Image 1 (cartoon, rainbow, N blue to C red):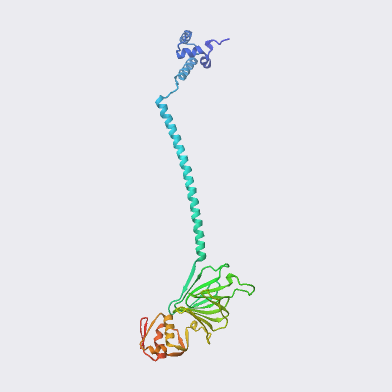
Image 2: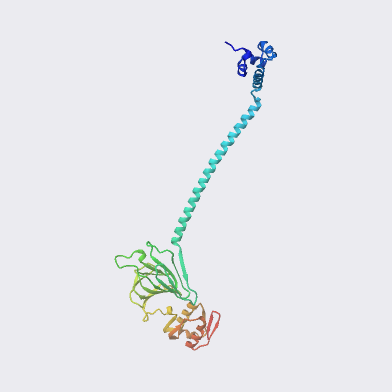
Length: 342
């Protein structure tokens, strides 16, 4: 049974199709009853007006359809945004790849640098030298003691490892006191061997003391204690020096070698002394030139063949003039590093 209009409430009005058609003024035939009903001002007129406004408001909302050209622009904008997003994603991927590639290259460079440094450090050398008039004592990595005469030098590898022979290169005059590492059982290991290199001579030792000299195209090895084996440019069998005072002398110009035995086994220059035993003045002056870095000019050449005995102290360079004058009984003058014997 339908509800009488006089009893309609808000919900009843908006549910009634004839009421909705009347409010929307549709093209269909609308019963005149709703106009007549509204004019009678019924008790539920407020509910009617409320329902009428609601339907009118709802009818006012329309779907907005963009123009065709607007649709095109909208889709172009959407596509552009999508393209931009894809481009940024691609750029991010490329950047990430570039960063990873650079990181890999950087790691490779660092690794290569460290390896190069390690290798270079393994083969790096140390050089020690003495000035004119100076005698220096140096401790090698194995605690062997090396004494450098004036104007001399040595060089050796910085790191002495188990897979390497202890090895030293010499220029000038040097005295070695080599630390003995071999226990006498079996063949000596590489690190237990010790080698000294001159230009032409190579000296192999285990633990001993000896003097080497390389000056004026002459190389000389003199044993102080122990045993050494001397090779000449590795071409012949080594020569053994087993008695203190034994000495090998190699002449560069003539490529000849002689072996002598010195009566005095003391290495005097370590104590700043030149021992003279029937020594020609010429040899004495050469020793002084090598030690002090001076040059001699001898007016009377016959003096050079004169032989002298005794000890010549290697003190200050300024003392050379007075000592020579006393020994030679000649006038000696000095002009800087030039000494004249008249």
